[in-house]
Image 1: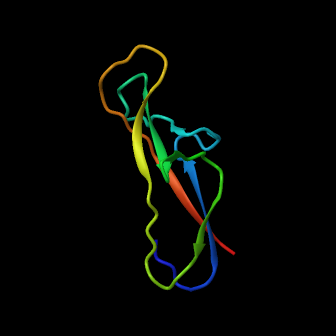
Image 2: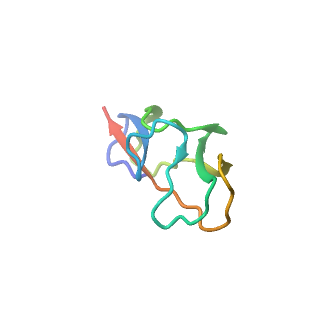
Image 3: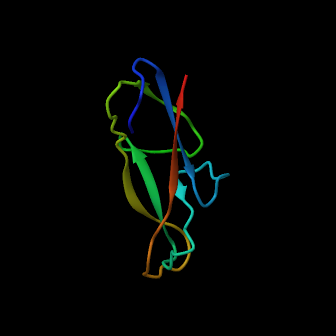
Length: 96
């Protein structure tokens, strides 16, 4: 993330691109996903991200910022089938 101005408070929000109403921590599968009973979960500081919830990212600087996230596979209910596992998220930065 590149910020043009320094010293502005930044809040970040992740949204599930395929289900914007999702307030959980597992991404909805994309149209390309062919696996079943498995989803992608995003983590920040080793804790699941709750979609739609803002968090403080600190103050902006006139340099590039890293946003560190991890992803892991989560087994869900139903019959497991191998295939493509894909989810998409949107990261929104709010400057105030």
